[in-house]
Image (cartoon, rainbow, N blue to C red; front, side):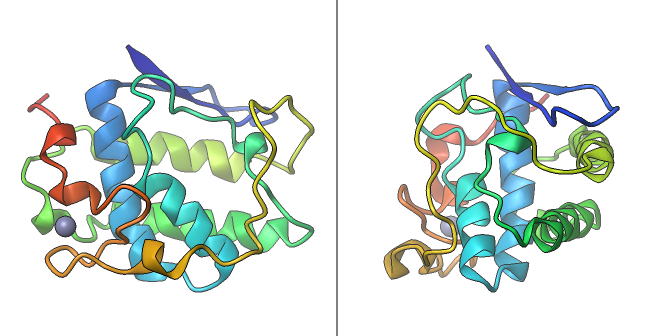
Length: 168
Ligand SMILES: [Zn+2]
């Protein structure tokens, strides 16, 4: 099983990750995102990573265009790039219970995709888009005392032993 991350409109190809690779990808994005998110939209984006690939194994890739961008999307895209950039500095990786040897490559490729993506374009979405200008439930933003990550809907992802990836 694998997950495909797309950015229709970018000249860069898709990012296909194994299930284990997807867990790593969301771990490092959550570590960086929880350190940066301020606005409601930003918190909702980081919750997508924090709760990502916890239930729908192998179906949790997404096209960037499926996200609920607002008229303020250039700033929202800039925030996503800041999250990726901070992740590329290995922010919080000392909290991981494993070595992520391929994560720098995932992040470098994803950064190129996001950076090359020019603007949101209409795509068919699997469900009604949520409104990310509405703040998430406060309990979702409570943080794990051990990892300082959002608890999200499903609890801190680094405390969830069922998704800790096998060494690659
Ligand atoms: Zn934790």
